[in-house]
Image: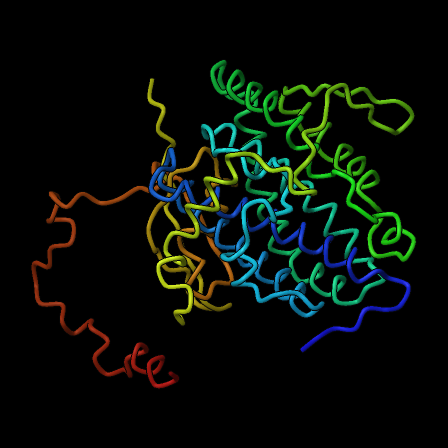
Amino acid sequence: MSIEVPSNISSKALSRFVLSLADDEFILGHRDSEWTGYGPILEEDIAFSNIAQDEIGHSLVWLTLCEQLGGRSPDAMAFERSWKEFTCCRFVSYPKGDFAYTVVRQYLFDAAEQVRLQSLAQSSFKPLKEIAEKLIREESYHLLHSQSLVERLGDATEESHRRMQAALDEAFSQSLGMFETLQDEEGLIQAGVFPGNDVLRNQWLHSIVPMLKAATLTLPVKSEHDIYRILCSSDDGGRRGAQTEHLQQLVSDLRQVYDLAPQSKW
Amino acid sequence: MDTQWETYEVFHQTKRGDAHVHVGSVHAPDPQMALQLAKDQFARRLKCVSLWVVRTKDVTATDYQDDGFFAQSTDKSYRDPKAFESPEKAVDDEH
C-alpha cells in the first residue's frame, strides 16, 4: 500500500526526514538492548530491555512509512544497508558507556522525542500526524522513566552527582547532533510538515535546562530573551551519512544472524 | 554503606473491582520509581488496570515458627462455609 504525497511536499525530503526518525530509534534501541543481562540492578536491566523493544518497534513504524513512501522494505532497510547509509545522528551510535551515560543519553533523547512528536502531532502530512499521536503515549513513559532517574541521581550522593555531570559533559555536544539541519528541510517547514530542527532544539532546551538545573546538573548554555545560546559545538554529520566507526561495529553486530541466511523467513 | 535499594511488594489488579493480587516485589529508591519499575516487571504481559506498591518493611507478618497462632484446639469445622457455592468456581465459569 503506497501513500500519496501532496504536491507541495517534496517526497524525497519527506522520506529523508522519516528515515532519520527511524534510524535514530533503531540504533538507540540496539544500544539499549546491550544492557540486557548487564543492568546495574535487575529492575533497570528489565526496564532498559523493555525500552529497547519499544524503540525498535517505533523504528518499524517509521520504516513502514518509508516503504509506503516508495522505499525498500523495513527488513532490507534495517539489515541490508551499509553502515554508511544510515542517517541516525551520531549521538545514538556511541557505545553505551556506564549507566550514568546511558541514563543521560536516554533522557536527552526522550525529551527530544517528546518535542518532536508533539510538533508532528500538528503536522500537515496526515500519516505523520497519526503516527505521532500513536507513539507519544509510550514515549511519555520513557521520558518519565529516564527523567526520574536523572532527578534522583543528579544529587543523590557525591559520586552519583560527579558521574552524572561527567556523563552530561560528554553527551551534551553529541546530543545537539539530533537537531542537525536536514537537506531540503526548508521546504518541509514551509509545507507545515514539521517546524524545523532549530525550533525543535530551542523547545527541547526549554524542557531540559530547568529540569537538569533542579537536578543540580549544569549545561554550557546561556539564556537570552527566551532563546538559549549554546556555548559548545554540535556533533553533526550523522544525517548526511558521516558516521563513526562505532556505528560500523554496531551494524556489523546486528547483521550477524541475518547475514547467515538473508533470504530466510522468520 | 548499604547501597541496595529497598524492596516494595507489588499488587496487581486485572480489572476494576477485582482484588489486587500480590505478584512479587521490586527494588526501588522510592514509591514512585517502584510503581514505574513494577509496571515493567509485572504489567507488561499481563493485562493490568491498577498497581499498588507497599514498602516491604511496612508489612507486618506472622512468624512461621509461631504455629500456635493458627492452632485449632477444638473441632471448628462447623464454621467452614461448606453449604455455599464456591466463589472461585463461579469466577471460573465466566471464562
